Image 1 (cartoon, one colour):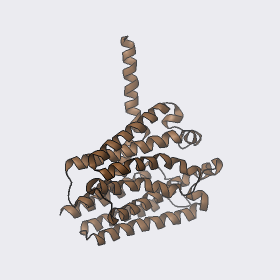
Image 2: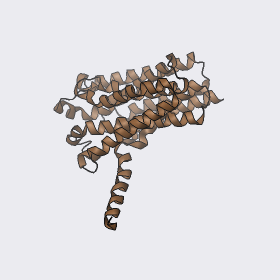
Image 3: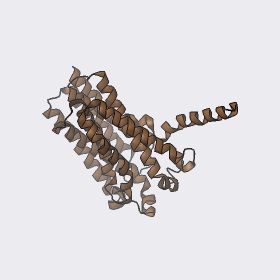
Image 4: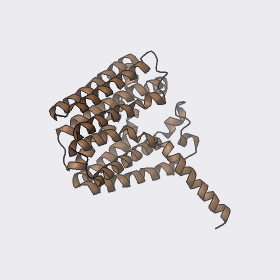
Length: 295
């Protein structure tokens, strides 16, 4: 092969290796991972075997990669027409549809192999989780429930991790998953308040479109209260030690700070700092859980 062609192929591959993680916001896997680890720790009642930790981590990364790549591919035309998202990789042409298709397939394979390495129930449920992650981006075209149902995409993580450890599902991870679904759904409601005019123009659906910004903020606050309440109930019924509840208090304060940044009258601060609040909430709960179990 011509050395110039080899050089061009190498640059092409290096560019994609650099840009693909940016396109799917790979670094933000930290949003879901701490809650997956929380489910893992509660199921194990200790730090699990390192191979279990590895396969749960890979399953979560595979699932999130699958979901984010599907979202980018399915929403490429919507993203192109929305000023907020028009600079993303597919609308700009810096990545191609085939890149997202490869990512979807890669994420699915990683998810299935990881679930297979864990147990039979995890393997049986993994394709169902993958299907949900793929169809979720379509929901905004049909129902205002798209925001709460996005929360359930993240809520798969703790229950899946629990199943990965025990091979069965019980009430504890269900309560934890409800907490995650409420917290993530609340965040999504507020985050898409900035797209109200765009959604109205394009006929898309969201909680804000259905009931207005002020009422949507009330719903979001209520969902956050349910989320924290579920965590406290879980801690009480599992007789978790005090660090778990300290983690819940810290998470509550971070959520309160979220409402200091934005309000129904001002959503101008819905930027990266606001978005990363998710990581602080999930990390606070995980660290509190880890300390509570290990001491």
